Structure formats: C-alpha cells, structure tokens
Image (cartoon, rainbow, N blue to C red; front, side, top):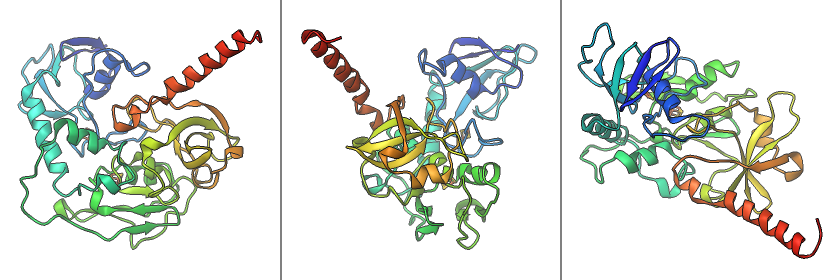
Length: 330
Ligand code: SF4
Ligand code: FES
C-alpha cells in the first residue's frame, strides 16, 4: 500500500487513492476529527464517477513525487485527480504558495458570480460562500461587465440561475449517471460556456431533483422551497418513509411543524449520501408522510451549523428526564 504524507501527517492508502481521498482519510471521515488538512472541493463528488478536475479549489503542492522519483511536481496539482504514489509528500494548509494559489482560484470563480447571497436560497450552506469567506479578496479587481442570464425553468420543480453557476459539471453528471435521460449539458467554451437544457427541455424523470442537492452554489434551486425561509431558521431532521423508488431516507427541513423542503442526507463533506426520488423530495411535505428519526447532524462550518438545536434537543430530553425523576415517575 502506498504511503503518503500530507502536511506532515502520514497514512497508508489502497492503490489508486487520490491525494484528496487520502487527506479525507487523515481527517477521519466518520467523526470529522483529527487535523483539518483536507482541501476544499467544488466539483468533486464522491458519488459521481469522473467528477473533479474542473474547479481547481482542491489544488495542493507535491514536494516529493515518490520514493522512486523524489522530484517535486513543478506546479500545484488538483488533488481530486492526482493519485498517490508511495513516498509522496504533499503540502496543503502548510504552504503559503498553495493558499495564495487557492485565493486566485476563488477570485476566478467569483469573477462572474453575483454577490446576491442576501437573496439566494443557498446562502448559509453555500460552498462558494464559505470559500469566499476563507480565501476570497474583500474587493474585486474585475472591471468588465459580469455575465447575466435570464432564469430558466427546468421542469416543474427546478429553477436554473445560470448567473450563479460555476461550471462544476456535477449536475450534468447526475443527469448522466442517476437519471435515465440527460437533457442538460455544457454548451460553448471558455467564458461563453453555460449549462443548457437543450432549449429548456424539462428533466422529467424520477431522480432529476438530485441536481439541486449536488449544486455547490445557488444555481439550481427547488421551486417548492424558493424564498420560503433562510436555511438557518429551519431545523433539519433525519426522516424516512417506505418508498418504492428510492431508499426514502431524507432530511426534512422544518419550521415549526411545517416541512419547508426535503433533501438527500449529506455527509461530512456536504456530499449526498443516497439519491432520493422526486416524489419524496417534492410531494411529501406533510409531517404524517414521514417517520422522524433525529436532528440531522451538520458538520459544515457554514452559517447553517450555527444553530445549536441538536444540543437544545438533548437539553430538552435531559430536562424532561429530570422533571420525571423529581415528580417520582420513571
Ligand atoms: S448549475 Fe450548479 S451543479 Fe450545475 S454546473 Fe452550475 S454550479 Fe455546477
Ligand atoms: S474539486 Fe478538485 S478540481 Fe474541483
């Protein structure tokens, strides 16, 4: 098994593991503990084949290629697309050069992205918002007009704000790999590229809603949730139902007893764990439709994780227990 050292932490990984995957293993994917050395990602998604390699936010520097050939790689590489070699040494958070390059990548990603977080449904759980906060410049150096597009309805449930798209290709890969039809794809090249629905054809298949969950920004939005609430005012709860099309395991986002939206459950990296069908996502918005399990655990350091409702739930349970003990009930 090849051994790689990232920011001074060594790990042995199976053949074919990428630097990004190795870094995530060091962080400890299950408990999200340990050194926080995993590079950020915008286009890589562990459940989508051939994803990654488009956004460059995951760049790292390889200071030693391998035991056999210790020469460093001449420029930063995309960690999601670079396979680990035995004896490889990599720097990420410890390299000022990598951090400077990442800053430049974020600046490029933000060239055309509007600063409309105050009205964007993705605000609070947006990967680009986090990235801009951590690595962005406080003002733009770009003098040219930004690209603008009209909003496009993609079928009855999804709206595309092309203006916010960062061309990560995740939605195209979902349509390609998860659904049985693909109507949207990337048209044109360079700064003219855009996600097209090939003349706005509806994506009318059972799993099309998953494009909303994989979009790292607010370019693909859920029409049943748009403008209903800031996401940090809602309480996500793990819930399930018997569904004949998907696993039926979801997160329902509650405001009081109203379900404002239903999404797939996401892992520590903000990536969908299991794809869910459109019936679960868009048509089951009553509490009676679901068996509620527990508060959805959110590790992301976004605004969304600032609601300490999980602790509150525990607190309520503890208080309930104490009250019962005081009143002599078991
Ligand atoms: S619409 Fe979203 S998921 Fe699709 S390419 Fe653009 S940013 Fe990525
Ligand atoms: S996450 Fe690696 S290039 Fe986008």
